[in-house]
Amino acid sequence: MKAAKDALGPYAGAVALLWNPRDEPRRGPKPALSLDAIAHAGIGLADAEGLAAVTMQRVADALGVTKMALYRYVPGKAELIAIMIDIGIGEAPQSGGAAGGWRLRLGEWARQMFGRFWRHPWALEATVGPRAIGPNELGWMEEAVAALAGTGLDGGEMLDVAATLAGHVRAIAQQRSALADGHPQRGMEAAVAGLLHGREERFPALTAAFDSAAEHGSQDKALDFGLARILDGVGLLIASRAQASPRPGPA
Image: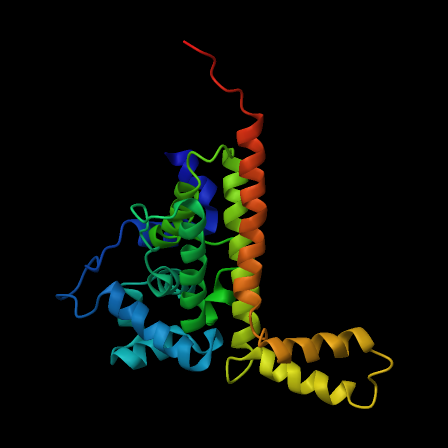
């Protein structure tokens, strides 16, 4: 146990807070706050102004308490961000009993993840690099791997499928959150259309592609298109494993 704790290094405090939440402070009067209330105050600030706006002082102000009172519940900003991530992202969609198999389960998993990042774009920045991981976030990994159980993929491949899907979701969510109206394709179309005007002969393929997209109404489909292609590839891998598996002989 000590070795496992030591391996957590600077994240041990955040891990303890996430996995063994204690709303009761160690000393002092009856608590007036909870970790949930503290996290939601931080989430509100981050949603409105970005992650940089979240400080212990501003969260304390939002809750109507002193910063020192806040420290009785959360040791510092790193721990605050950790609980904000876990509560903001929330629990993974539970689709174990859903019809349609692994493909529909993973498609729904990815779209739900996109929705969480879309509502809380600061979480894209907050979930990069080494950090403490909470039960809700680990639950998302569990759900993705569970969807692939029995497909013939090994554990590493299951984890890589989840990572590939999450990477695609994050890329599209980050692109969309960077634009005020949430429609990157519109901004891209306007910018590219202006650049292409009068230069069609220099960029004929790009011009034709944009004209075709407008004609077929296929703009702004990057999330679904990418998910479909990733899952197509996973399906081919699963099928190849099934064909390679020896069939049982007659009894």
